[in-house]
Image (cartoon, rainbow, N blue to C red; front, side, top):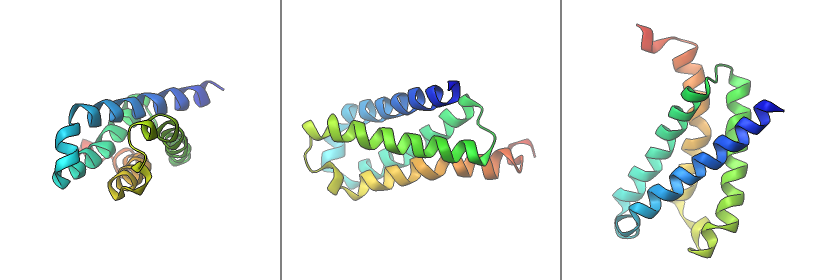
Amino acid sequence: MRVFFKNIVSGIVFWAIMFVLVSVFLEAYNQFDWAKILISISSGIIAILLVHCLKIEKTRQAFILSLTWLFIGLILDYFITMKFNEQIFNSIYLWFSYGLMFISPLVYVKLIKKKSLWKK
């Protein structure tokens, strides 16, 4: 139960970080594709940082965390972000962000934690 709660809270925190990041750079985000790409890439970086802070070390844990984050992000974007942008789910950049957010914990656990790439 504690792990489930940690996954949900970290998903809400992840979504909030991304919401604030997009909000801060909204003018550039709306005008330039490069801003959308940079913010999308930042979702993967933030995911890796959160996984590191949460001390996730097993692939199964990373997969469950990724699914939880995806589910929470979709729900919060549907109920909150759509009030500001009704077309949000039509954005390829949003789906790119979700994809990076989803695979980043798995990549981190598989490549960095298991192979100890940082230690060499």
